[in-house]
Amino acid sequence: MADNSLNIVVVNDDGWGTAGVRLLAQEMAKIGRVYVIAPDGPRSGKGAAITVNAPITLKRLEEHDLNGAEVYITNGTPADCVKLAREVVLKDKRIDLLVSGINHGSNASVNVIYSGTMGACLVAAEKGIPAIGWSINTHQMDVDLHWLQPFLVQVTQHLLEEGVEPMTCYNINAPVGEIEGIQWTRQCRAHWQNELAPLPTSSCEEGTSAYTLVGEFVNDEPDAIDTDVWAVGHQKIAITPISIDLTAYGSL
Image 1 (cartoon, rainbow, N blue to C red):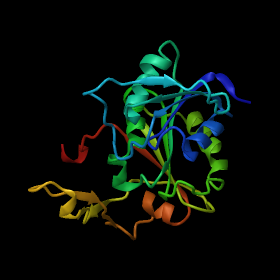
Image 2: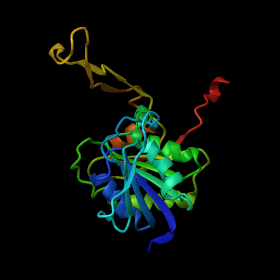
Image 3: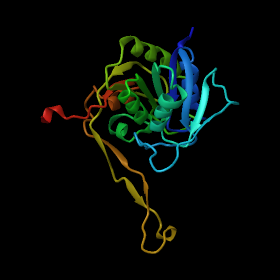
Image 4: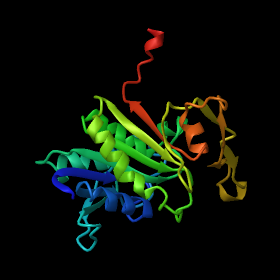
């Protein structure tokens, strides 16, 4: 039975109405009281960006009830959602957990630096809020999530019981289809290349060129079996602790 004294904020970067955020809200309602605070549309690739040049709006959707969750939408970013949770929606309450996702698309390896899903978790970690980001390794919005569903509560409860280190959050990536295990992993060393494709010049005004993001993901250590990319590629859920302390201690 859910502990209604446990306040859980659910955010994402794909927009409030996606299957991923709906499933996450449904499953988190088995643990505690859920507040969904999400962008009013897609905000993928925003990282931990915040809105600084326009007002940030917030609206409660009274007509929508996700398993008893209060649902709010904003024109802001996932990082803004965390600030709205802390400063407005739960201003006088403790936030016991922030869960972000389920993101459609991998946030393993270097993708974590671009991810709006994980950007929200990093902001939560900065504020001392335990945070978990969930992603699935496909951009298909209609992906079958039932393989992942049984693990959402199980893993979340385990991480809560273990406790979250200060300035740390969890980046969890799942494969598509049947899941064959769970693995603690490190972030894979990788990079993106050939990332920009030119658009026809007819689409631009004279003297201007335009491009669209594409790119090839290159695993720089394909034989390493302790990385998030390897685990997901072998049908395992990868759990990677992420720190907001970016100091390169080995260089000091």
